[in-house]
Length: 280
Image 1 (cartoon, helix red, strand yellow):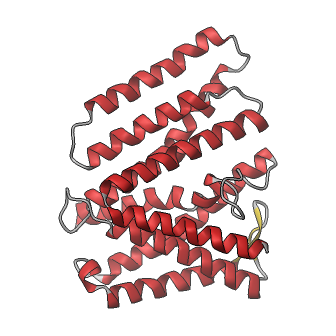
Image 2 (image 1 turned 120 degrees about the vertical axis):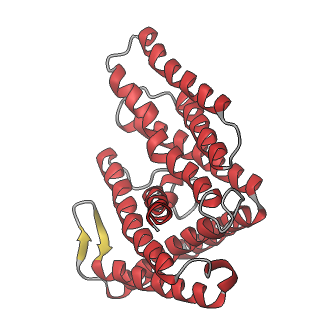
């Protein structure tokens, strides 16, 4: 029953992401703004509950969304001075409000309030950079790289889960995530590479504007940093003494549980395509 629930949730979740990415820039931007909001509120809630701090879910969410908007609108080539000015103002408010709160650990409260900007809002915002700045026609919205990134992440997850459950023996990082194995990680990497070759072969109109090594490099980076992203989120949960970050996704936990691998893979892939643009 649990496997069925996980499967149904995963299919619905993937369908929503695919629909919004393919539907166009408004749906794309709206989806990941919503993800930024939900994940930020989830993180600050966990911080307050398990770390005994007083992070502000409201100001954390406001600041994260303004940062997301500033980066996303800049990537789309639109004026974003209002977004950046509002973001800076929200940062100032986060600092100043601690003067009046009379709490024992203001530095910790500020740190947990603003941490989601780097950990959550930045990766989601960089999806817009991937969609607008590295397309075959820079400056126009293209679903190719964001869509491919999520396909690679899902292939890695599916391959790692299936192979790990079947023949997994050697622990990958037992101190942080006892269930992950080297066999599972290898299976995820192989399935992702296979997906890369198939996409390049059968969808040439989407991928042939770049040589195949670009996409194989992206696949490798997605697998590596996706695994690290998964481990990092496990590290956070282990520190808090929890199994799941939330319950919004039946069978999968919370938003951070579902996007953990993406939160490090997205910035890494952005650096990959930036390096290609700069040096080649």
